Amino acid sequence: MEEKIREFLKAKFPGAIIREDNFRGQQSIYIRKEFLFDICKALFDNRELDFIFLADICSLDWLGQPDESDGRFEVIYNLYSFKHKYRLLLKVKLSGVDPKIDSLTSIWQTANWLEREVFDLMGIIFVGHPDLRKIVTADDLDGYPLRKDFPLTYEVPQFSFNKDEPPEVIL
Amino acid sequence: MGLEEKIPDSIILTSMDKMVNWARKRSMWPFGFGLACCAIEMMSTFASHFDLARFGMEVMRPSPRQADLMIVAGRVSAKMAPVVKRLYDQMPNPKWVISMGACASCGGIFNNYAIIQGVDKIIPVDIYVPGCPPRPEQLIEGIMKLFEKIQKESLSPKKEAANKLTA
Image (cartoon, rainbow over all chains, first blue to last red; front, side):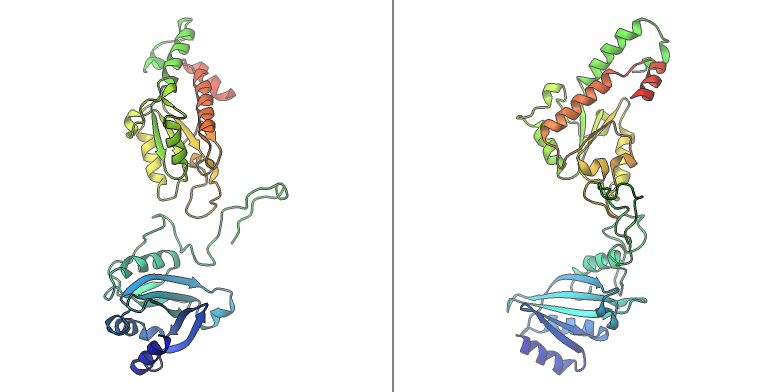
């Protein structure tokens, strides 16, 4: 199955794949940001590969890790094909300054809420989204909670070993 | 009851106090505000094995306008906080609040951006029942303590102010 996908993508979109990764049987392909919408549309329309199910859109923040060199944020699209019972992860790296990526709502309607959740928690803007606003956090919460530079808790719980110290804020 | 403003301090008020407090505590209607897992333990307290109806809490009113005891059972998230405040404001006086469980008392194990660290940051609480979740016996013990607290209340404003200082 990996061979079929690789040939299909190399034939239609030369230069789109940066690298591939296989972790314990789960195949993931790093692609360039500009090709994302066309690749997803091609995988969706292709009746042979038949990736018609968008299971999830998630995002990572690589702040402070070695993987930050080619982009701070990473957006992962979880595609599933019922015909071959095969799951494929498409990963796109975005820069930390002004992260923008194309929206997939015109292909899969479920991407509407999935992208709203990624925007609410990580701050990645989806260009072309019909209604991008907060969906999960409280209305008066400023900032993006799942970023690594958002404070983690208000204070450290007081145990016997630190009960004499003032409560500190963990970042 | 409206008596508090009109009747001045007099001997008849001492036994009036006892009667009014007894009537209030033995016929409380709870507004069980079950938010999360503690709601299951609250439901089992109201069920037949640990019956709360024998203490007078026969009906659990879903409307705050007809309830006088609010049991906040479960974690209060930042999105839910204005709703809790509004429901508390809609309850008529006299009203009491029991915060059930660790999350309602102090935030519990959730120390993050989404959960209010204790419901007493938004509404005044009378009794805190710790536990995760507290067993029905513990909730009943909390309610018994609330009964003792109500028994000490007084109709005359001078005695009530003195109560607030000592309690």
